[in-house]
Every structure is written in structure tokens, then in C-alpha cells.
Image 1 (spheres, rainbow, N blue to C red):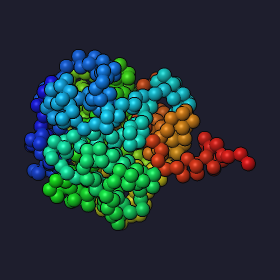
Image 2: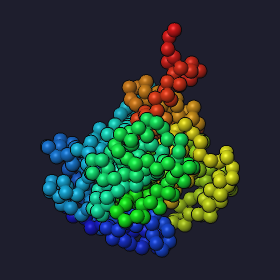
Image 3: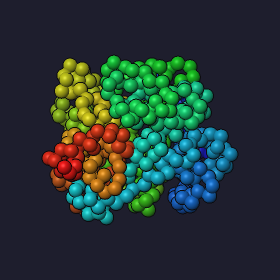
Image 4: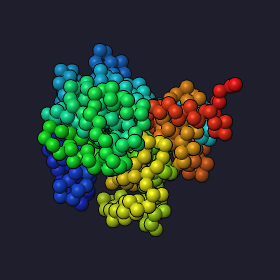
Length: 447
């Protein structure tokens, strides 16, 4: 199935288009990010095709939790049932990306957040091969990079992106340079990246500084950025809500809840919902809840009017970028505004997908909440007591659902999907948590 694709500026007042074989990530007219857009409207009969592919019949592309939905992200414009074409174009870790990621009921977590077990599910993206949701987007981004003849992929990372980029680069025999904020990356994640032969580039500063350096490096010929400003990363990450909706037999929940960092997941979820609604695949729009760490809460402050009386909104494509610039300027001078949380995966002060994130929130009537490090650790730990593994940043989804339930924003009978973005890679966090008897779910050792 061929589906004509192009890149389009997300600014509705611009809409400039680019070839799908462009390396552009921003519009050169107005500086907004780009979207991948498809000419054809896919038939909802594909739902049955996707279900049948769960019996992969020897195809790694049917096994893949990303490429099983390949008709909905066919930017390569291939015949999707032609396995030779799939093999030539689609980058896959032997079908492992997204393969084991689906929602689960977790009774202890449901009790903790204050919802009936049948009304809430959690989707652990840590079951991806590199241990986080990043593999969904990375498979699509590296597919486009390969299509463009890239020899080196480049990213900035606080951990999970570096592990995923390194794994895919090694598998595709590409070079990989990772720009990291010196001393601000979890050793467990850093060791993964080293294991895959990546070249670390230390930057004196935080993630935002490393990200700026990485984009400069990606302008070199043969280089290709795989951070979430890359529109093809967003395409791969659309499959996270696809799998959740498929599990629910395409019956739309009331809420989809994500941790908020660079806002790539928020953006991809919003894009997937906009497309599914436009195509008539869903009749109802779930609300997105973005959960910031209180120590890295740029979106929370701006969206809820805490920094300024004005509440930052997409505003039909005209967000107040001056308000964002003023906040960033204040952040550079005020230590209390600089990102600081033990949840390093979301320790980001300048979310690179803020415009797409605002668009997603506007489309879904979404909200932004914040939770403390202690609340995230409780969320992480109760997931563990249910026999599942997640990192501290994933605990933001659990803690956020509980907080919104306590406030009455999430109702008792609402249907909720919480996304757990990665598995535990920082061994000292749970050790320290459980050795402190004052923590809610602590299991200190007996003497």
C-alpha cells in the first residue's frame, strides 16, 4: 500500500511543504517544527489487519509493535505487504521494538491511585529492547536516516535516548555521537550507550545545552539528528497510543497520561489522535494529562499561568513565544527555575517540542500537573510491588493519576491509560527508597 507523504510546517498560518526526502526539521520561513503528512486516508478495515499480524507468520515487521502499524506511518511509500520492500527500507531490531509493550492491569497501583482495577491500565514501554519508549521513535527516525544515506546519527541525551540511538546505530553499522550534560546522566543508562560503541561528547551544562550542541553537529554532511524534534521520531512514537487503543478494542479511554520532559510523547500522542479522529477511526477524543516533575516544571508553570498571569496555549497556531522566551531568560538567572530532579529522564528545562505539545493539549482539552520526587518514587515503587519494572520518571504517570484523582479532575468511573516510559536503570534509587522506613512502600532489610 503506497501512501504519498510530505513534510508540512505545523504553523497553520504558514503550511510550507517539503519533500519527504528532506533533512529539514524546522520550517525555514517561520521556524516552526514540521509534521509528516499523508495524502491518503487509511481504511479502518486495517484494524483487522493489525490484529491478524499479532500472529506474525514469520515476519519481523508483523512482530514489531511499530511496523505492525506500518500503513499508518508509511513515509517510505512502500508496498506494505511486500516483505522484500519492508526489509530494504524499514529499520528494526528483529521485530523487538514495541513488541512486548501493551497495557496491563495492576491492582495495587489501581488501589493506590484511587481507581477500580478495571478502569485503569498501565503500559510499560520499558519492555522495549533498550529499556524505554525511545525505541518506538528511533526505529522510524533511523529508517528515514538510512533512506537519506546518513552515516552517523547524533543526539543529546540524559540517558534513554543514548541507549536507543547507540543500539540502532550499532545494528545498522552507523556511527553514533551522543552529546551529554557532564555529570547529569544516570550511570546505568550511560553504560548502555558505551556498550553499543557510541562516541560520548561531554558538554559543560545541562541537557538543553547538550541539545543545542548536538543540533549544530547534525548539520555536518552525512549526519542525522534523532532527537524528538525529528518528525520521524514522532511517527514511530505514535504507535504507543495505537497499541493502547488496540488493547481496548479501539474504545477510547477518557485519559492518556504521560510524564512530561521534552514533550515528544505528548506531541506524538496528539498527532496520532488528530489523525485517527480525522480518518474516522475514533469518534471520541481522550484527554491528555502531562505530568511534570516539580523540579523541572516549565510546561506546568507556563500552561497554568504560574509564571505569568497569561496561560500559555497553542492558540490556533499562534502561541506566545515571547512568554516562553521570558521564562527561559528568567531561568538562566534564577537557580530555583533550573531543572533539578532525580528523575533524570524528564530533567529538561526547555522542552524542544513545546509547540507540538501545546497543539496536542489544545486538541484533547488536556491538562498539565506536577508531582514531587517523593511522589514519583512512590509511584515507581508501587509499580514494582505489582511485579512490573519502571524508572522514576515513569512514576510521574502513577503519581499524576493519583493527584488528579484526589483533586476530582479524574472521576471515579473514568477510563485511564498511564504510560510507563522506561524501566529502572538507576539501581541506587530503589535501594535508597526501600532502606528508608519512612517511605510509603519501603521494604527495609531485616537485621
